[in-house]
Image (cartoon, rainbow, N blue to C red; front, side, top):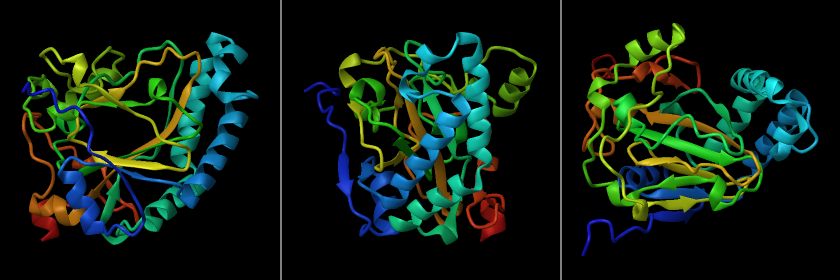
Length: 284
């Protein structure tokens, strides 16, 4: 049997009854967990829709490219991302959603909550990658949710056959501090480390969920956004979290192939008071 024959994602629909410990164990084992029909997520989707329509100034957000001239699109999308990052009600509703599904917020640190837009026929900025190639944080969990209904052609693609298979990549040459300095200077640089070997198309499995659902997966999963050629834009919410107990004890997904020279723990701040993620020595 080929090593790529087992292509089914370990996708599991779960309820808020799953404990925090059970969730973390499942995610570190490679499962993709979908929490369906979460009431705070429905409210967050409605709020996000209001922000999108107001800031983009369109009647039909998924067709905004046909309603706005190209020269206005980038400016308005930047304004949307900025507002989303700083909106206190957005943050409150997402934290409420995490609490609703059983996340232990006392130990939870998160990255910025982002509104991501993937327009029609524009290549995603992030190619195929493992988040951990850049962060070096193997307790990292990714959270992803659509704002409007999507299809598999506007969702995420996972490569579960590579979950336990090392993959050649350029993470050893991807220094986070250097990348940031190059971006500030205006240079075009890769936003994430990338594979340096060919990836089998047969390994791809596409996942699409409903507005109000919340997908959780390990940052060590090989994944990417599906190139969008549907004629409709994709709007989604995303962030990443770390449980400090696991971070300081080294618990998390296995590091099969990551070699980045820096640990990006500064990405994560405590949900309750914005305190920085401590080092293992400081937290023990």
